[in-house]
Length: 441
Image 1 (tube, rainbow, N blue to C red):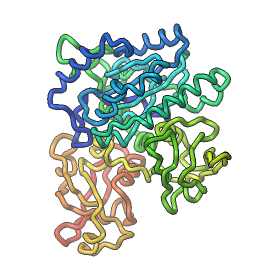
Image 2: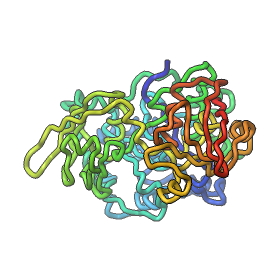
Image 3: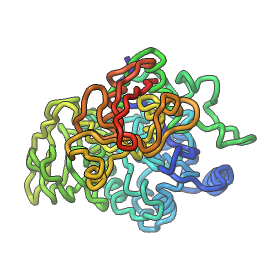
Image 4: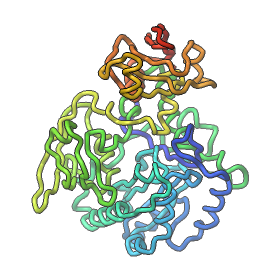
């Protein structure tokens, strides 16, 4: 069985399936332009994290590694600001700065982060100890968002940890990656032999890159090829804080902006204005750190958050019920595309509005998953070939008619069924009930 942590799968040079992350028109040109502009930059070491570690060891500075999908328009605003904003210079000068634009040669034992983001940053000590992570879904969804307040707060947090190192090393244990069966992405079956650790700058450089979705797909596919189900953490990787009912402010490290009524966080007593300082003793310096802590959290049980309130610090115990990860919204994650092929035969599902439910005669607490899209090619055509049609509404799946989301359906099917099996479904089609089956791949 593979490690319960996700392999790093950097989304680089990728024209994402659907519209989750729109790409520039000339991807090849964008990559080559980036290299021309950055290869000999005075501050940034270009595409060589090993050189960054060597320099960090030499200078005693912490290491900052930005991982950026150049052709992807998502996060373009913050990427430009990090490279150009004058106010960031005093902070960046306290780091050894590295810009990495492809995942081929990444050391997967060290680089473990949210692979669905097109701009991520990891902070290290020269000895390889991870101080923290930064990644923003706010910027991912808005390429024009240039705000760097949250990034600056994370830089400050990383510098504070560095000043306390190595006395604080034990507290950082929960931020480190664990053993992993592959040293680099190009060693993963399905990618091995097709890609090299270096890019083909003399040829088609974009096509020589290991894309984020390719690595994630390869890991999930490896389970399926072994006839296994897919672990929950591979279906719901790096849960956003709102999975437990917390919205964090975008201009701070981990300040609670709001708490959803009735959520895990609300039941635990977290409040708007709380500053999350740690989970189970592990210091937090960004929302990405919160997601990492949630990713490492148990399938059920308790985790303890330390929350600063004014001049005091409160310990808050959060109870995670079984299935809590299902609350994560994975609909806009690039990695979900391949899972739709595996679990849904290529269907793209959404839920009808309450008004549409009323028109269909389906109660609010009952299942209603509408096929807003039906795949036409390859494995994504399996549902079509099994008789599914656009606008079919699933009212019962695998013997259950309780209301669920598309993400819940994907997770339950991939964790319960193996390739080649079929799942019974009842669908509403043009006012009539039809019995179909979903081919699991």
